[in-house]
Length: 85
Image (cartoon, rainbow, N blue to C red; front, side, top):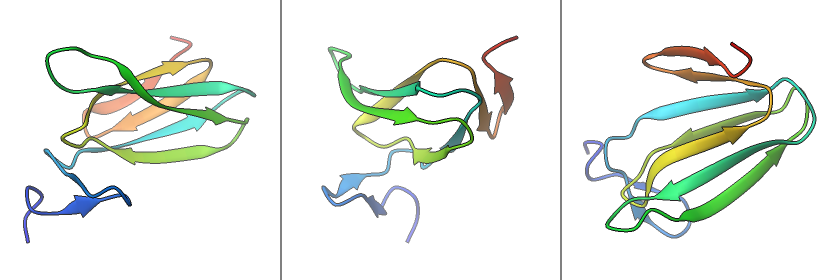
């Protein structure tokens, strides 16, 4: 089974490219917002992280982008991004 055929989550979203990313909160109240894919980009999911908490997520056919508010470190296959830099 390749990444195109996999299913993720309880609502059975099809995985688009399967790229994972990790967000580690450096302070209380870091917000991670999932944005929809398609003609109109909209917020579809929000998570609040406390200091030290880690969120592991994956892009899907429904999720095309993620917005991070607050002090955090984001790990991707493209590198590491510190929101304070």
